[in-house]
Each structure stands twice: as C-alpha cells, then as structure tokens.
Image (cartoon, rainbow, N blue to C red):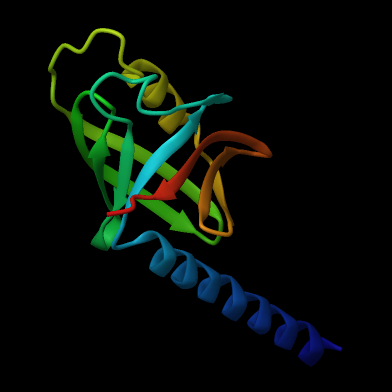
Amino acid sequence: MLKLIISLCAVTLMFSSCSSADLLSQLSGKEWNVTSLLGKNLNGGDAPGKLPSINFGDNGKLFGSTGCNNFVGSFKLDGTSLSLDPGAITKMFCPESSEDNFLTAIKQVTNLKMDGSTLNLLNGATTVMSLVPKTK
C-alpha cells in the first residue's frame, strides 16, 4: 500500500512539473494582446493608442505595455498558479487609456487557463483578462 501511495505521488509530481513547462513554452516567445479586461471587451477603438500587452520572457521576466506605458517586471508560474508583478513602469500621461484597469487586473491574477489560442488570466474561477497572440 505504501509503495502505491509513493508511486501515485511521484506520478502526480511528474505531471504537475510537466504542465508548468508545457504552459511556459506556450506562453513564451510571443506578445499577448489583451482582448478583455475586468469583464469588458477591448478593441483598438476603446483604447486610444494601443491595447495592453504582455510578454513572458526567460527566467520569469515579464514585460509589455499597459496600453499607455511600458513595464518590466516578473512572473511566477507553478502548474496553473500564476502571479504577475508589473515592476517598473514608465510614467507618460495618457488620458482615456485602460492603464489603471490593466494595473488593477494584473495584480489580481492567481491562475491561468488556455482555451485554444486564448490565454485566460484568472482570479480563482473569475476571468480577470483574456489575451490572444499578436498577429503580424
């Protein structure tokens, strides 16, 4: 019985570590554009200038745009648990941008879920923001 429990724990650990690596490979190397934020759909007409975006870099580096300012911070991925820290942010003034909502939302993220090519950043079961890979 003890061998069975140890074997099950080892298999569970193996699958959970693989899922983080698989998710990281899906997240890295592309720019993710925000399509919905705190329950509201975004499009180019909603945010003068540009939409918020996120890039997941190597070694837990996070960078992107708030829709107004650029940021460089960090992220931590453990299975499907995710924490985001926008870190340092430039300070340009951009009236009518979605920056405040984006910064509020990014700090609420606790986990993620991939739905096809859509990345959903969640707080528990509630979608905080949805993102899609930037098309060239």
